[in-house]
Image 1 (cartoon, rainbow, N blue to C red):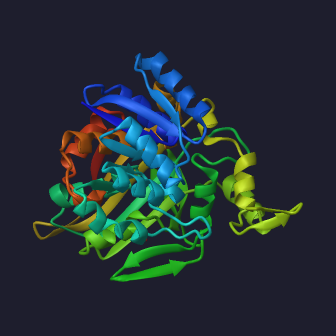
Image 2: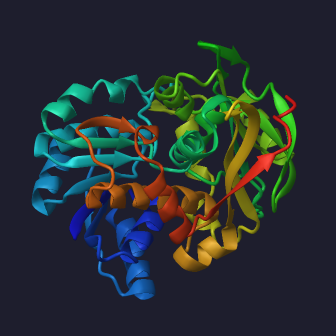
Length: 401
């Protein structure tokens, strides 16, 4: 039994804390903190009403290393679960090192002034965490996170060698809004508008944003257009599974979303550099975030399903084979259980699972780790038991594109 400190109070955090409350034998105490304590209080109230589990709340500025360290010292958790913004990863890691506590997050660090998705900043902490005898687990969401675990499961059980890996992320949900993002608008739009990159034969190949499109038939969702993008798990998979010759990431977008995004880009609302407005500096994308619907508010109206998984082609016993491992998650079922839609659910549940495996010692190490560096089996087993069941299909042939 262990106490954890969860930092961040968005939809992902809400899901993670609701799921932790269902495993009191592992999560004996949960403290939830964010810059705005009232959001933590709302989550704690929901958890109490649904599961009778008490969550303590606190206020903290996660950009402030000393303030975060002081909170950690007061709470004395065994693990800090960072579900705040990716900009805050390094300050929270610093606070964990300062206080001697393990660390987990769901998304890699990125600087505020550049849409740069790299692990180099966090991988640079390797020696400091190892020398302190601490563990940092990076990217325990769905993608990154579960998609990397799917890859290592395929390598362990289905293929002797993976040659190509495609990660497919489809959100078939409809929230009824003209334009809204299903997770933090600022992070979402920075990702979508960044150049696409994929890994092929030891090189990174860059293409313009949203310039490569393919149609794909997703189980329980239907045919959707998906677009080649860059996502951080490509970097860690290329590093830790170097035998894979090509790794790509695809995400679906509806025509209405893309139309609105194009207009917002054309008028400068997706800029992340400051502009002067009435004598003050503002970041247009941060202002846009403020006027868009809060992702956590979309749960009640969102209907449909997500489908996220890996398609891997390689060899098994000398024969060429292709396997598809994926999960389908229902927005309405996720909302009934946790009060959040499936995009938050598919990230919050894996955050809970990663934390549980660290706390129980099933996943253990000293240093900074990515998901694919551990045995996939206990993680895969917990996905089935805690709301994200997966399935495996052998495909008759590789992807035709």
